[in-house]
Length: 381
Ligand code: NZQ
Ligand code: ZN
Image (cartoon, rainbow, N blue to C red):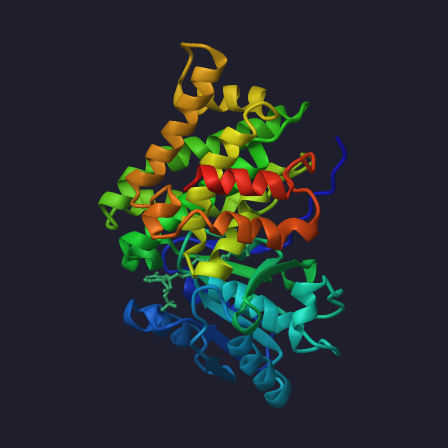
């Protein structure tokens, strides 16, 4: 096993920490605050940010919707270029954070910025950014990834660059009290699947990473019913926020093969149907695990025993029971596990298999080809 581990994101965790953010932004710089569709105006987060930035030179750009849209983000890019903002502050969920990362990379980019996502055009510079997270789910607050949608092209693509790692991330669990049930459920599923795509992967010599991943899964399993039932449970909200951040800040994945096929297939589902990100994952992951039960067999047996306490029955029975428990968890937080639950017919399988055919095999061993994508999505019908 060989790896580099360097995560420079400074985390300011805890209730009231928004008040501390101005000290993290260089003095004298023009600040652009980017946000979504308005949740921060009704839950008090905007007022806290405005108070923290009192006396600073700042302006705002709102309206970054879920699955942040290229055309909207390019309007922010124009403003950054025209008005010379030197620091971007994202305030919201993963979509606002991802959108801000794209703006940060696109503003100094010489060519067509969509190429950053579409063909992996290298990011040579980015406007520095910080984040105030209001939705525990994506881990975007502590990683260098961004996922952007391009409606005119029918695409949803990602890019990764250390230059768009937030300089700091404010994680105040109290900001999540206002989350609707749908977003709470989505966040639990997204974080769960992030862990699974780094943990349910054939590998050896990763005892530490295994136990860290299992700690997150057990925490999410135990916290899920608490946050679903009561957004006044401060301890549960705090645990959820920290778990989701740790699920995708790189630590549990150091030195291990990873399998992001569920996410890649999920992004295609969102591009074609508009489904919420986490809802695509809840449909794809169980079907993918069943399809790959042989390759992932030892890992699935470990998952069955350590996460779901399943020790009886044949290996095949234990694996199936663990996948069924996973589906039950997703449904228990209000997230369906079948395409038909979303009114989507089985013909989507051929369309997505065709779209992914040119991108090479996915999965930890490259074994998920177009035929496998088709079979997985048909099984998820
Ligand atoms: O837009 P506003 O009004 O802010 O409302 C949002 C939005 O409607 C609302 N919301 C957020 N915080 C709230 C709140 N409502 C009430 N109270 C609060 N405290 O929630 C809705 C969904 O927000 P969104 O940001 O879209 O959700 P999420 O955080 O799940 O982000 C999803 C996006 O992140 C990408 C996904 O593909 C998707 O585009 N991902 C990013 C990743 C990364 N950067 O590492 C990894 C993930 O796998 C994922 O792909
Ligand atoms: Zn995700």
